Amino acid sequence: MNDEKQKRRSGWYWWPLLLPVIYVLSIGPVTKIYVEMEQAHLNTEWIKPCFYRFYAPLHWANRNSTWVDQFFDWYIDDLWQVYP
Image (cartoon, rainbow, N blue to C red; front, side):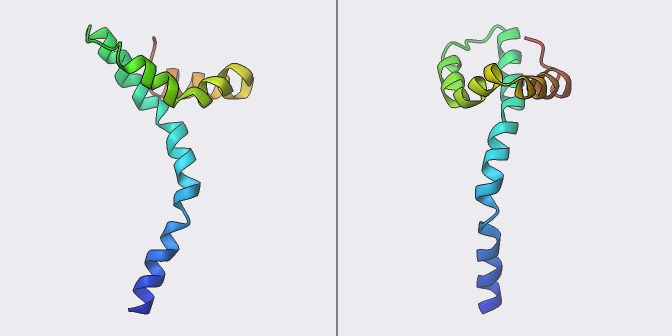
């Protein structure tokens, strides 16, 4: 019983490290879905404010760092093949 509790507790320390990675990498599929919805002529006006507020730190980093800009150019444009 004690080993089972220890295993459950030991996995929790990874979440604070993984959440920022998941947040940054989530912009790829979200952007892909958003662009495909626009190409299908679906109403995306309600998504824009949510998208820009949620990803505001990434937009700021993209504007202010050439390294981040190059990463997102590769990640979104090349890897996810999003061409807005």
